[in-house]
Length: 186
Image 1 (cartoon, rainbow, N blue to C red):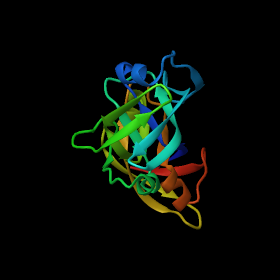
Image 2 (image 1 turned 45 degrees about the vertical axis):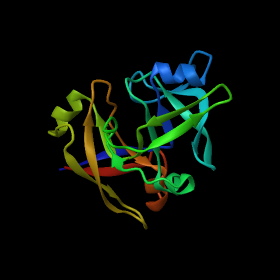
Image 3 (image 1 turned 90 degrees about the vertical axis):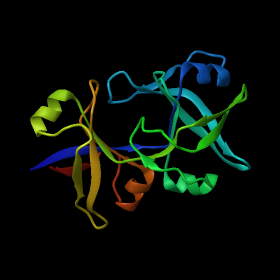
């Protein structure tokens, strides 16, 4: 079966516990804009990722707070930082490398550095509608000069908003833009 789905770019960002956030910022987290995933947002707060002398600045903190720290980057970012994180699903952080997070208020080293796997967000009703299960492998077809079929994984959550998330490397390689339509293949 084939269905149309919008693409959203997932740029580098971090999810933090309240404890780590408080060490890095002495202020409340504030909303820059809300994401389509209900209750989630990009905050006004940014930080620097550091691995020795290798840095990436102005990395967005996303809210709300999580029970774990997670840093999501692209392979291109990994080359800049000279690290080799695994491609993982959100929350699958066992044996992931550490990275230093810095602000002008503090510095913390955390594990949880990953390259996000491609995924299609859905809520439970969407999963029933499309007859899929959480973590099921699906295809995403991109119909353009640099397109093709990419593997992705279904991510079913209570707050899921039906869209596929690609990182900046995937977006550039496939010549697609934020909010383009692609085809979900189940």
